[in-house]
Amino acid sequence: IVTGNTVEDFGGHFMLDGSRVGTGLQLSSSRDILCVDNLVRVGTGVGILCNALQGGGPPLDNVLRGNRVREVSNPTNHNVSGGLRLANGSGVARTGTLVEGNSVVDCGRYGILLENHGDSLLDGNLVRGSAGAGIVISSLERALVRDNLVVDSGAYGESPPGAIQLVNSARGVILSGNSAGL
Image (tube, helix red, strand yellow):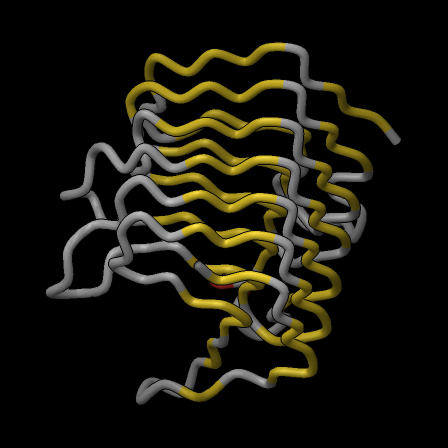
């Protein structure tokens, strides 16, 4: 259980290639983790990362609920920039991740990225002020994306803007009751 933590002012670190990455809370290759009611703010990289480490197993049956992520971005490395990044390599199919009731505000390129996390649910999240897309669903089979509110996506003129995007062979995705606006 990861609950009630405050992570702030994290600066990230430099990789061998000179790129900068960072994470407020990292749940890599974790199983049955309950990540609830945490505050992650003002940092470089990703607010909460849930992925498969190289050589590690896929994350399975994790819950991210009621977390607040604010002002996390990576202006020098946009590909690893956002509020909630749930992204695995192509060898991962099903993770059964629940992402529910989180608030992601002014966070990098994507508010929430769900990639190679099949059989997952995004429910009742607020995403406001992402530089590009609010929610991106990519390279997965079966996900339910419902009752999310996405406001001010593309707020900083980054391309491609959009409230909710389905890309890279996202299949079997159900969108229901989501709202988007200015």
